[in-house]
Length: 189
Image (cartoon, rainbow, N blue to C red):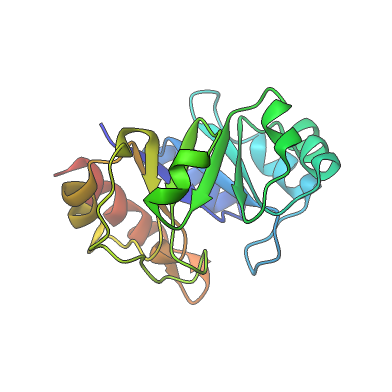
């Protein structure tokens, strides 16, 4: 079954809705973004997440100290890294999801999982779906996914998981109806 990650959650009601709908992963954004949360906010929200739902910290070119602090404070289960990555981040003892733009990047990745995303993460734009990807059993597909197109992405790539942020929002806020529609599009196939 395709795993589902809701990313960029910032409010208690969003966490409760996601958990209630059966999401597999929740992502907290620690990089500059309108969806950014502090380590303290993430720790508070983390208390609402049951152990079976994995919590992912999303970073862009972080320093090791920043990641260590977030893992400790917010109780992260995985880290998702975008951009240039310090090699020492792979030695923290926490699974890494590495964001990639193309399959050629996979060969050099040391990450447990990869995430194929558009050029601007969180922008709502898709990567080129004409791209042929192999090894997607270890990959999340992201970038511009919505309740209306996620089933096509799954049919095309058969990924380990799908990752959505702006595709489940209305006016920049998570929308429970869109969250539910996204889950239905993935699981109700």
